[in-house]
Image (cartoon, rainbow, N blue to C red; front, side, top):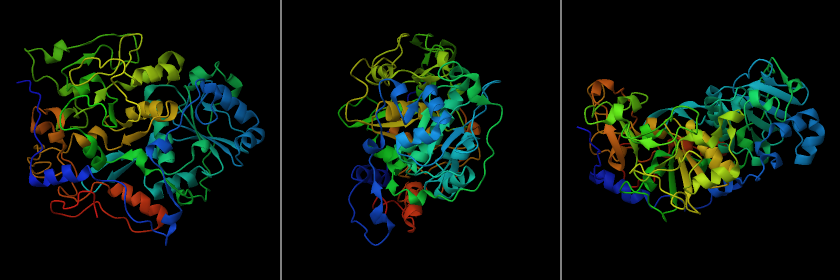
Length: 495
């Protein structure tokens, strides 16, 4: 039977968490005895930046090939204009096509290094569950600074795709996210707009490229500890998302929250609806309609094609709106970001030329004025917060909207269920306060044999903020707090 499952928030422990989480955040006395007293804690609004209407006018954030060409051709002059004293470091996630493999360095003050997405993600545990792709910890980030000899306070760091495609745009975003999260200033960080195959002839020429990358020297001495800002609010934890998800699956306006599902419509709906061409890079495919081959009455359970990572269920958190990440990019221009005006119109609830825009839980367009509301904080997610890097760059780096990335994403959220895995055990007990299934629309896996076990640290943890707490502590040298422990939480904010 094709069922939309909406369970109520059950259990005493779950109720305590739900009530307590809404009061989390802020407060606390200032510690003036350690390095913590020197660290500025930034809000998502402070971390966001507004792009110029023409990306060619940007000197950080999303930049054009012409800007990078100007920089690399005379970096000593250009860095002085930017108020910098260090190197130009280009981190390219993949090689470009023949003839445009790597942006050409000079080996003196301009360097281009190959740096795939695996450099910028890590398996980590939030105190409740282990998640496969999270922002790296402090020691790992310091190792990256050492590997590429980056001085994060004085260098300009440019994240580049190499070959332009959606996967490399995601990985490019992961570089920006990791560096910004750990405190690199916006003036030291740029995203090169478009892949090398398009940039070669659009702001750059064949002489701007070479066949090999620079050799990573592994001689850097800088540490993220020297960056005395706390940008950890760029990450929304499981605990943070549970605090803002509404009690029903409706488009709640006026609550200060905008939750953006960057995945395909088929994943958002667990196969109840698709967007034609949703898994292509085309913006011309058009209509949103029932996937008749999958959700017709004759095949009510044939929706497992929407599942990823052998999860226990598919669907979305209550209150989220969906617009697939591909609509932020122009595949005819090396998968560069669409214009600021186009992105702003989509975020507000408008549609593109193909009639595609944000949809809600009824799978209908929400309409102009009914998506993002001014003052909202955006919570961006996908399956592993790779696709959401693209939507998050659009909102946080181009449109200047307060944005947080739910880094655990649906690989984490869809795991936290009172459901059996293929070993015959429940992933979470029925009274765990971390059951996200009770705050979601979902369709369960058709058989427990299809569900992989998850690494659960504590089904009754007092906090799911262990990662952020550890990262804060890395900068101050203090012991991390929260993230473990047994028993139903008396204080779900931790501590």
